[in-house]
Length: 172
Image (cartoon, rainbow, N blue to C red; front, top):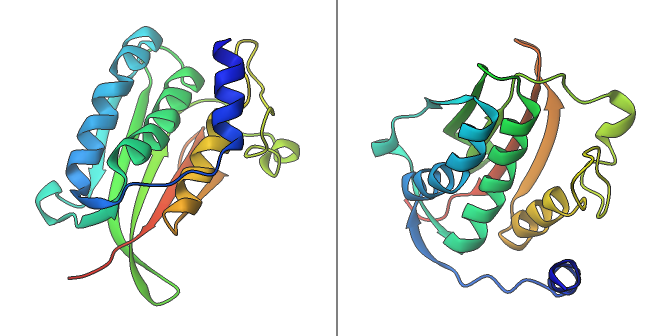
């Protein structure tokens, strides 16, 4: 029944309820939501990037965006080895000449095999023994509804993968 509800929810178009929300608040809420998974995996969370006070206020659906970011944090925790670190990095950037906020989640896992990279965001695609393959597809859907995008790559600086949410920043 729960799986069926998730499938039906996935099939419905999302209608974000947009409101002004400080990016720092989204980061904190997602960290809180992912805390159980981080503890269970025995990994610590490290914050990097711009100072929280300088992060922009976003026009987003905070519930949906926290869900998207939590999905990435939980995946990173599960991909990392015990004692490892998941990095949550948020910084202002330019994309196509417009101001954006890039929120990256970096793990210290095995990385993503090249053959799987282009399939990661497909519904029902999973590499986990326990999973339905909807987390990244839902994350992508949420970002698209916000005029943003999500990308995945292997890290160059370290073993592991990096998932980045790119969100437009409107206003000052």
